[in-house]
Amino acid sequence: MTFFFETYGCQMNTAESAALAEILRERGWSAAEKGEDADLVLLNTCSVRETAEKRVLGRLAQYAALKKKKEARAFTLVVAGCMAQRLGGKLREEYRAVDYVMGTGARSVFPQILEAAERGGREALPDPAGVEPAFVFSSFHLEKGQFRSFVPIMHGCNNFCSYCIVPYVRGREISRSPSSILEEIRRLSEKGVREICLLGQNVNTYRWEEGGGVLDFPGLLELVAGALKETSVRWVRFLSANPRDFSPRAIRAMADNPVFCRHLHLCVQHGSDAVLRAMNRNYTRESYLALVREIREAMPGISLSTDILVGFPGETEEDVRLTLDLMEEVKFLYAYMYHYNPREGTAAFALPGRIDDKVKRERLGRVIALQKKHTKELLKNRIGEQETVLIEGISRKNADELITRTERDEMVAVPGDASLIGSFARATLSSLRGNTFRAERLEFL
Image (cartoon, rainbow, N blue to C red; front, side):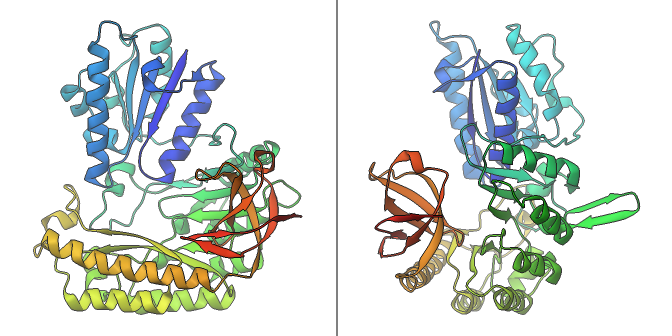
């Protein structure tokens, strides 16, 4: 039997889709090239933005129409992830073609869904939409054929930022046992994986209590660094890090262990204390800037990226100026920039002072323009330097070129063939094309 997945949203969804695909392969299923050819279609959904949900609803309408065609093959349609958690059985009420709704807390029923699909029906399975949420970590998240892998270390979020729906669809924070994390890393090393990314909605608050002792995030970083000696894994990244919870010990753990890449995604969201308070971010502009200074002092040359949200209810021109000033001071390598869209179910949905869409777009345009300027300046200043790169794949624009990545999360195109994918090499950054460096050749380590 065959399956086809469509994954929307964050890296956690990507990791969870890989884990579900592994379960299918262990049962003898194989991947189909498109949904029309599959016996099971699963949409792993996102609820962070309304646009993501609209895309899923559009795809559900297409699959519903496909099911109605007389010549279409029978297939099982599953909606999983955050949107499934948020809407539950309402999805099946509106889209009768949906066979199962499997929220983030109901993944334990997935084997039962597969059993029903293998029997050609669903009648033997209670509706997973009614299952009491009880999140369980998967044991393995490697995508087939990949040499980079996500390793979830925690799930959920306790922060309740006023604009964010994640705590409502992912639930409270749950940390994964260190023994399970290390076992997955061991298995990944056996598969020849070269880079891992420790994953969580807020990795900094990782906490595991056992036998009267407590392992926190800095302790986990040190544990992982020790476990990776003499393995195939050479680079480690982690997402996402909340500035409020980033401790000096975590900085030292990164600085003392070169396995941790010299790049950090540190979400700031805004440069105004008034807006940060309204967002319930629980840190200030100055505390964020002080953290940046501490990180750069411990790890000179580290690159930083961030998220920036403009147009939040009540935002003033002065607030926008403060955000632009913060960007000028930090100079992020890149940023994910977007304007606020009301999300029903969040605290910010009821806030007064909503900003006109035209104003939001204009403010966002200024933020984007400044970030483009900083990105270009930072990359231009790197030309001529030599860097270790991990060869990721073939360039989509030129079949004779490889795409590689530095530990600072910069892209480098260089001549080469597919046999080199998954290897580390040294490259001299000779020129720049857009935001991608070019190198003339690779020197292998």
